[in-house]
Length: 359
Image (cartoon, rainbow, N blue to C red):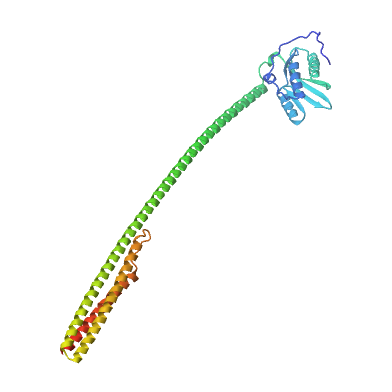
């Protein structure tokens, strides 16, 4: 059906209820737009006091939840069998003619909805009541409805306040959790820094202790080397002194032996043949003892020189210095003992021969 732009249209201002003034969503379906259009059109017809009542609204809500239908207050639109079925429930104002008002509502709603879709449109108008001059006072049912609306509004407001408080509490909890996490992160960072500083201090102390220990070991090694060198020098000096003493003792023994031989020769010249023989034997023994003492003195001198060379060689080594070898000291001591024994034996022989010569 096409709209005639030249037709005269009567415009009537209508006070719409709150549910009809809220904007529809952008994705609203055709039946939803048709229901809103039918409700606004019916309210604009003269003689219509209001649309629907409590029971009609409840029935419309149930029907909209069960099938492909949409509705407004007192209007129900169903899409079935490739057509739109519109049901409008009205209350007529007294003393308007009920049939005439219903027919006008049917005509205007059909024309308005037909402009929204190409589907066939059928309109059923149901007159629920006639509103007279004595119906301005709210009935018990209306008061109950209003009380129910107020209760629903209070519940809605309470739920909104509770939701707002819950959001605020959740935000506060998130903020506290964020602050706690930041505090924990700072504490962890501080602990990490302290551990790192402690590790660095421990490493420095360990490095210093190692350096001190190395210095002490080096000092002890130098001190031991110095003591070893002093001991070597002292042993060499003692060996040289012992060798000199051995040479002197050997020389003295040779001189005594020669003197004893001379004395024995003189005694042999004045004594008899037997005594001369004994004196000659004593002279031979003294001469042998002198030679032996000289040999022992030369060996002791060689041992002393060997010990002196060993001491000088060891003195030239700094880190590997060690005490004088026990075998070298033992050799020098043994040579000195042998020289002493030889001289003592020669002295005994001379004493015995002297006593025999006297007897």
